[in-house]
Each structure stands twice: as C-alpha cells, then as structure tokens.
Length: 224
Image (tube, rainbow, N blue to C red; front, side, top):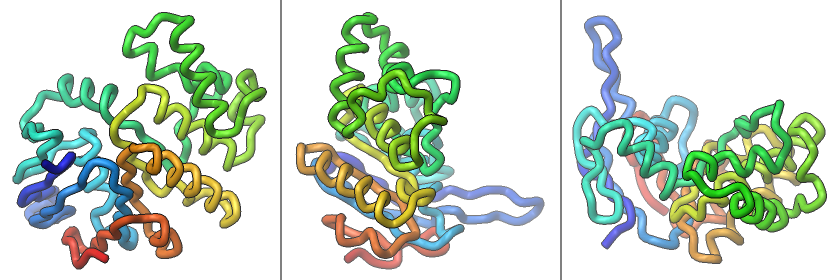
C-alpha cells in the first residue's frame, strides 16, 4: 500500500469567467521511505501539489489518500491534526519566529501537541544536535547564517517525529555549497527511514532522489 496516493486530482481557480488549472488530472503514488523530487519551473503547479500532499489545501476534484484513508473531504481541523502528527515542513523562507531563540522555535510544534516542558526541551535539543547546531540553542534566528536557519527549520520539522518531510525549495535562498549540505541532511534523514518529498525548480538536486517527477502546466510530464 502506498503511503500517499493522488487519484485524478484537479485544483481549479476561478479568474473572472475563466478557470485556471493549477493541477490537471494528477495521478501518482509515494511509497514509505522514498526520496521524491517534484521538479518544475515557476507556475508549473508543484507548490500547489505540495500544499495538497501536505494537507494545507484540498483538491477541487479527485482523491487524496494518506495511509489508506481518503482525506480529501476532511475538515480543516482534521487536516491540521494530520499535519501536526504526520508531516514536517521545511520552507524556502525558513519561517522561523525572529523573537524566539532556536530552542523555542524547535519546541513550538510540541507545544501544540501538549508535550510537557521537560520532554519537549529534551526532544528539541536532540534534533538541534542532529543538524549540527548544538551550543546555539539560545541564539536568535538573526544571529545565524541562512544555512544554519534552514537547519533549524529541519530540526523543527523532525521534532514531532513525522513520517513525511515536505521541503519546498529548501535550497532556494542558499549558496550552492550550503545548499548541498542541506540536501545531504535531508538524504541522511531519508536513509533513517523517513519519506522525504522535495519541491524544486533546481535540476541539480535530482541526484539525491530515488524518483524525479517532472511537472509542467499542472500535469505530470514524466518520471525518471
């Protein structure tokens, strides 16, 4: 059984009297433990696809199946519950809270899970060390480099022990050397059993993936 499956998925936006197809009859499966790269130019629909896979949005038509359950019609609250327990997000812009230190940023998802203070602090420190930032727990995001901030975002994504890591242009704001380190981090996480899905326009990242899904004009063109 696939971990994630999309069946005949459409995402259609109304623009006046016109309809814009952000996704147009998309079908694919992701198996547990895979490293998948969704590759496409700006406007190809890859971010829309990520939002639907990540339970941030619902399709206009079609089915989204997660761990054997169709979640397409779930309420927003139910989807939020799935996100918090099953999916970790890594964004291009890091999305760290500037007024909080690194430890506080990483523990934030655990607060929403009502994890006790001592336990969430212990878990956060574990993942901060895992991404190579031990000793910087009390630093604010503005005191870190772009690469270090992205590693904090990875630690925050991992702290809830999700089954799936979704990364949207994780190297987009980084130089090539730092970007390579971040991709190596994600590959190491994948090799420990996590399912990793990266959305990008950067063709140089394809070597990290088990499977590359090429997207254009809301459709899957091919897989390599």
